[in-house]
Each structure stands twice: as C-alpha cells, then as structure tokens.
Image (cartoon, rainbow, N blue to C red; front, top):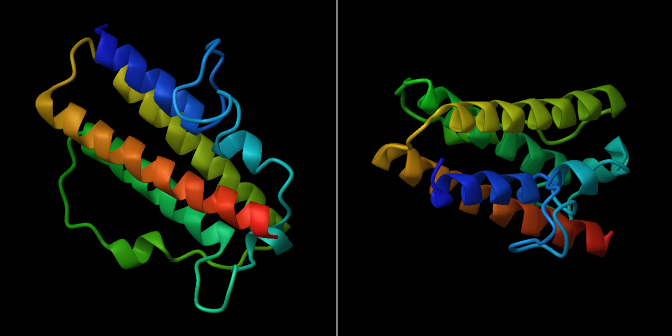
Length: 151
C-alpha cells in the first residue's frame, strides 16, 4: 500500500473519529470526527436547524452517509446519475431514526475503508473519488461542529 493510500485511510479515520494514530492531520485529535462527536447528541438536537431554512444536523449526517454510500457504490463499479435531492431527504429524526442514521454513517464509513483497503493500487478514478469524498465529508463535519457549538 503506497503512502497516499495509507494517508487517505488515516485521514478518513480521523474524519470519522476513529483514528488511533498518534497525530492528527486536520482535527484537534483523531477521535474528534463524526462518530465520536455525534455520540452524545440526542434526536431533538439533531433535528434542530441553526436558523430557519438551514439544514439540521440530521440532514448533514444523512447527506454524508449518502455521499459515502455513493462512493462505495462507485468503487463497486456502479455508474448512475446522482440524485442530490435524495441526499438531503432526512431532516427531522426521532431517537430510533437518529440511532439508525448514525449506524448507517458508521456502516458506510466501514464499507469505504474495506473497499479502499482491499485495493493494492488505487486507480486515477479511485484517487479522484476518494479526494472528493474526503473533502466533502470534512466540509460537512465542520458544518456540524459549528452547529453543535451554537446550540
């Protein structure tokens, strides 16, 4: 596995809050990403928007789970038109739906790591897609952290 491949997997682990690396690349710690940050957030908070018309925490999480699942499907060779409206379908959640959404986010991340980790060499398309995915999920993590600091 080359340096890019290892670094990509480490940065994804950091973004999702499960990195065990001694240093972090872009967060305060390798465990301050999605899965750890969202652990103690309840459904009511996840369903709040910072102001009317803005996306909720749950909406951002649903969008990220959709993005990562889309990356997984593309790594599996699927090609299809993207329905971005579908990615924002979640907005308000109860506790059961919130638990399911966080589990979906975790499963999507684990699927991505499995798919990328199984490749000995990343194609140009894999590199492009993984960069797009990493940057996109990092952006939404920043949005979520800003929202949590405001609540």
